[in-house]
Length: 244
Ligand SMILES: Nc1ncnc2c1ncn2[C@@H]1O[C@H](COP(=O)(O)OP(=O)(O)OP(=O)(O)O)[C@@H](O)[C@H]1O
Image 1 (cartoon, rainbow, N blue to C red):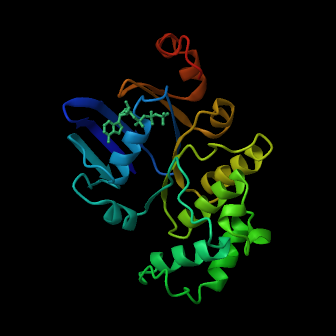
Image 2: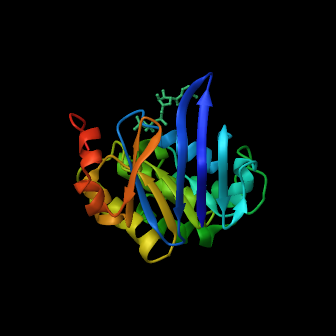
């Protein structure tokens, strides 16, 4: 479904990503780990089209999308979430989903005009993400876990087949991690979506991922099933003194 061939990214002469090649099959859950600054978010930016690659090729469903902008990749089924929250604190949960639905269906993203319609879709999406009881709450009043759920709800409205989740557990309290983990698991297992996820919670990842990609200094250090990656001597030595 996704193939990266010798992908690299440089900024002002600094090589941030170098020679990253990997292939993801449809329905797979691939986790990305690596120390801070290893290049995980930068790689997601290249895959989603937020930044152009400096070298290499990216293909989606066998089609070269290397030169396609982010919105064109989104139309082909790619959706991504961001490490930092992208919600409007003064807008309700339901209105976030309604506006996302309006934008996804090609309507203008009119903030000044309350998006009408889409009630059934909003209801279903909030139910799907466990947010029904919070429909009328302002996003700013949500817990971290609920905010992460709402970001997923906004993403799901576009019905992405390939989801790039950048640290979806960031800032979430320990009590809220299991519900969020289950939601992400069901997006993959029950709905068959392909998921690429950057996450620092190793215990969460090991239970979700089919394979784990280890990034280190802008390169792909290892890519294998979770147990094999954790047992890999190179990975262990790269992480010596680092928290996995
Ligand atoms: N626009 C940019 N210009 C210059 N350097 C950048 C830019 N974006 C990222 N970098 C650098 O690229 C490196 C990789 O950053 P990136 O955010 O991709 O790492 P990461 O693995 O996602 O880290 P974290 O786990 O902390 O989110 C870092 O050294 C960062 O400072």
